[in-house]
Amino acid sequence: MEKYSNSIKARFTARHQKCINLVGNVKRKKILNIGCYNGWFEQMMVKKGAKEIVGIDTNEKFIIMAQKNVPEVKFFKMSVLGLNFSKEYFDLITMFDVIEHLPKGTEVKAFKGINKILKANGKVVVSTPNNHFLANILDPAWYFGHRHYKEEQLKKMLGKSGFKIEKMEKRGGFFEMISAILLYIFKWIFRREVPFKKFLEQKRDKEYLVNKNGFMTIFIKVVANEKDF
View 1 (cartoon, rainbow, N blue to C red):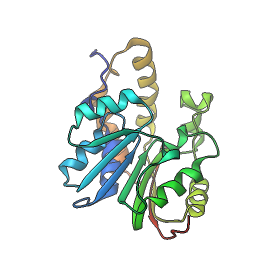
View 2: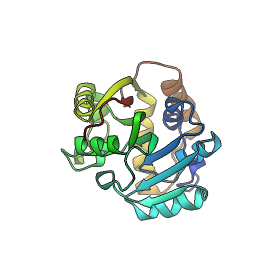
View 3: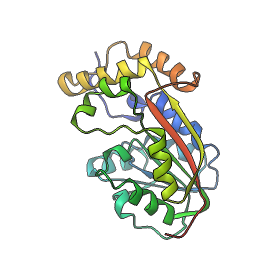
View 4: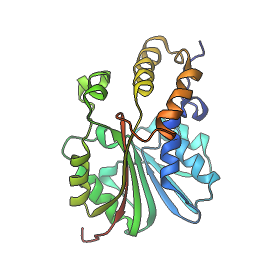
């Protein structure tokens, strides 16, 4: 088995590709990605011709790694709860698997902060774990406070923050679930890549990019329709 790697190539999955597909055309757009990790999203946005890309994260090690991977992008250590950008600056803001890690009860504050720096009719794309009994009980982190959300919870939070839902989908199933469990085991115990990785990735491709019904991850695309915050 190969040694575990945080490289973009090693960590990129169908779930990431689904995020990229959902943002659509980004040419000449100003983009903020909240929770940059290793810079995978920023790298793809550079390739797709975005005008300006900014990545932020609260983990300084991730900022350093992302900057090394994508030197043409600006990266800053910053929290979504303390955004320091001009009002109505960005055309698109993305936040993939971030809100479940925020302090409980601060989600609306985070979304309102995002709305302030988003242009009128700007878009926000979010992904987060789905609150489904299988997704919950088979996520080891769920037992330690890793939150999962229901669609209605997210709709209510986003509505309070001045957003209108444009698209909401649930993707990922059995093979995403198995891959996640194996990742915890092999990353943290053995520091090795998951066995049968290629086979699992092929199955996950279908769960995220072909099948329309899933239960692991919620993907949401919203548009800013209120700017009174």
